[in-house]
Amino acid sequence: MIHPRRFRPLAVLALLLIWSGCAPGGPAEHHHEGARSAASASSGPSEASRMVCGGFVLRQLAGALGGEPVTAPVGSWDGRVYSCPYVYAAGTMVLSVRESGGAAGADFEGLRGSGGVVRELTGLGEAAFVRADGSAVVRKDGMVLVVDVSGLPEVFGSPARGRADVSVMAATTVMTCWKEHIAEEVRRS
Picture: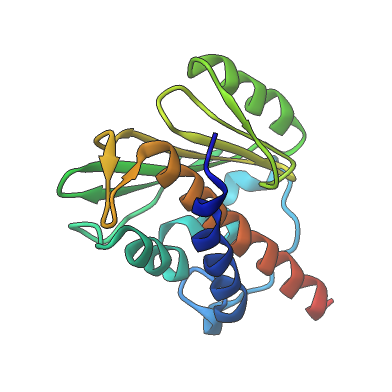
């Protein structure tokens, strides 16, 4: 169980994200895309997926983890999954988004079974859990976010945190951005 005191920094992080904007390149780069289905996702990743690989998410994670990746993260798209490795001197964390549309529930459950014993998380997306290796998996609308920390040491960052805490912090950052992105689209409609 995560100690309640550890959620205070996450609450501050959430407020900062809400005030600062979360588009891939910052608040000035918001583009209206609307909802995407799994069928339309083949033309490229959604704006929400691309958010995991730069802009405010990158800056927030650098501040929260006490350092930036050794190289700028570069995302890749395989027609359904957008992946973004954050390569640090001590290891690699991969943020990926499966644009599953109506299959998000099945994808989410499939990931539950593939990663060992899980711990349920509340308050992130529609459903979330942490796998035995510390990686976080979150289902939100037609997407499944995976924060894979299996490539990081057991304790990482400055201040030092366990891998599960790092993955939950990263997932919270992304979920806050997605929530803000949706709210911005609604305001524009």
